[in-house]
Each structure stands twice: as structure tokens, then as C-alpha cells.
Length: 113
Length: 112
Image (cartoon, rainbow over all chains, first blue to last red; front, side, top):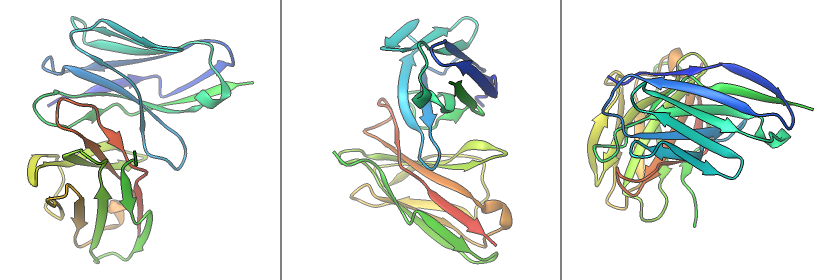
């Protein structure tokens, strides 16, 4: 079955700097890669996603890149702000088959003042 | 548009008891998935329902079960609770498997 590895587990960056979180997946059939942000006491919130027919997607300060050959995908957050502090999860699934999502273990992002 | 709602938000049960959790998906969404979140294991897929049928199931024992009603609302049941079942149980909904999933706030279950 699918396995998603996520690194680093903890990341501290200075406010205004960029943050990068990296993930790898094992199942070449995976075609959908969402990223979720989870704040304390809340459920995961979808912040951006990418499908396998696209190499990069950007939404304001957030971007995601996908390398299908290497089975890598990454989240980039630029000009980080205090409200970016949260736990971020990458995930992979096979859209069109069912809604089963396999998640990475999460990255706790700290934005330092 | 209202988001995914889950009830109750918090629950304390005793080992050996059973529990039923409820999830109301976003209006128009027909797929409901359940996940268990623990500090040690992270987010793990339990099962998914679409149009009242279980479409996929994760690697959990038979004590974990679920169902979906004709209005797409879903319930999950855990029988013979164990201490290790203490977790945040999350429900997510989508229109169908080609669309993105949105999560509810979760039900925090504590087993004592």
C-alpha cells in the first residue's frame, strides 16, 4: 500500500523567511497530493493541493511542487507570518478510485518573532 | 455554506464500553471518510462511505464499524473500548472521489 514520508518533523523559521516541507510517496498510482494545516483544537484544513498532471501550483504565499519521477512533492511558504505556526500534513491518494488519503506524520512549524 | 460537523466534540468512556460518533457532511457531499489521529500513529484512515456503501476500509479491527444514511450523514461505532482507542476521531467529506476532502473539528475520545 501507499506510504508517505514527511520531513522535517519540526521546523523553526524566522518571521519573514521561507519554509519548505518535503514529502515522498511510494505508490506510483497516486495522483492527488493535498496539504493540510492543523491548528490546536481544530481539524485539518486543506490549504493547497496538486494533481499528478501538474508540476507546480501557487496560491499567494503558498506553493507546491511535484516530481512524479522521483515521487517527491514539497510545500513552500514564503514571507512567513506568526499565523503560519501550526502542524502541516502532506498526503497522497488515488483520486477517482475512492477517498482514502494516506498522510505523512506531520511537520510542526514554528515562526519565530 | 456550513462545514462538516461532528458530535459530540468530547467524550469520556470506560474501558469495555461502546461509543457512537456522528458526522454531518457539507451539503451536497456524498462521500464521508473517518480517520483516527493519535500522537504516536498520526492520521490513519478508518473507512469511507459513499452513497450508503462502504467503499474502502483501513487496517483497524472489527470493533470499529460505521454506516452512512440516505442523507449522507455518517456514524462510526467502536465496541469494547480499549485504552488505546483514546484519540481524536476526524470525519471528512467530499462530493465524490474526484474532489477534495474537507475535515470536521473532530471528536476527542478519552477511554479510562
